[in-house]
Length: 150
Image (cartoon, rainbow, N blue to C red; front, side, top):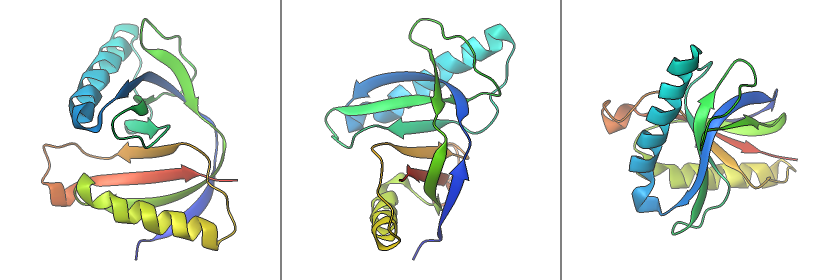
């Protein structure tokens, strides 16, 4: 059983690239997007203010609608495909997960059950915040999963 909690989150400004992709192309797309946004942040002399994330706006594995980005301290202008965005304010159910990404499906299931059992209604988007990268052993990958609720 995972440690699932609820918290109220403030709006978080972000810079993101939003696109559609197939699940098998996602790892490469994430890496490319992080590099592009990181280069832009370096160009304008700004640091990210928290760990990188991916927002999943749907779960169609052959046509994922994803928003890949970095939190920033204040709203910033976009450039080209890099857009100013935000993680909205509101209640979120979250869980810290350690292990390979392939093992997160059961955590999502536990979170969905917890949301229902505790009288909340899920919103459409789920966020994964990545605390380390694939250079670490899979067993050490640390991901915070956020599910906004009403």
